[in-house]
Image 1 (cartoon, rainbow, N blue to C red):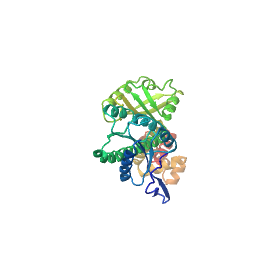
Image 2: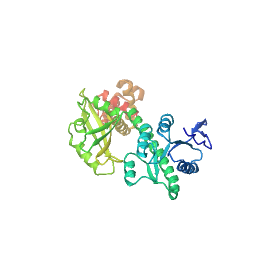
Image 3: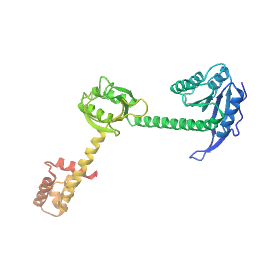
Image 4: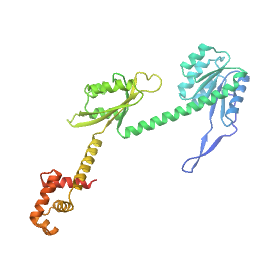
Length: 349
């Protein structure tokens, strides 16, 4: 194996947010070319753009296989016409081992057909090998590496978001315009299972062919903004469940007929919201009572009889009875139990 180029700097020190110091791995670049003069030219340009990178060279199939097997690469620059293979084969070998590693073909023997074929199979850039294009080689390497880093961050973010949504038990799915499910996370499967549906392959089946589902999908397919709707369904235990469905047109390549969506069980949330609203209403009604009626209400909630209330407030029993009747009328309750329940609700505000 040809000796690898010794990097100017083996690694860079980096401080994380906690103050600890750790080593950042140097970038690893592989040059695949069996012409030593061309290899030297490419290495010179790469060294100029990435002075601290570790640059490796492969001049035959054995060296290529060994490096791909033993070294995690960040970039590959390959010629097309090799004595032992060609650049398309190299491209496929690299992508098979390191799918996210960008590959640039820098060649003097390729043509437009080779470039198109390479791009179709995952080639990141294609550059004609001549002196004029050496500057472009630098720019292209920086661009594809930055793009790969951005893509990796986006994938990591999507993975973390998907994990978070699963922990929050939010169903995430993709479907066709007709509602046929293409992909779904574990939380979606569990939600469908808890509803007792025979199949989770279709939104229509999940919502018992509710026409609003079709309308929602149609709106999502013709709009750039998300659309959502709440549905009430009955689960396997005959318990009413409230679900919120949010859908939007898919993004990215090949997404013209794809709709992305979220499905969330909002039963508990709606119950909590209803309880909060009831408490606010109860507090507003009690605020309308007179000071004396509030005193009587407090005594009633403590379980005191009219005689005890009269003695505690230094009023007659008849006056207590009038205040009780008045406050029950204002609060629109018919029993002491309802009265106490409303008072407890109001205290929660």
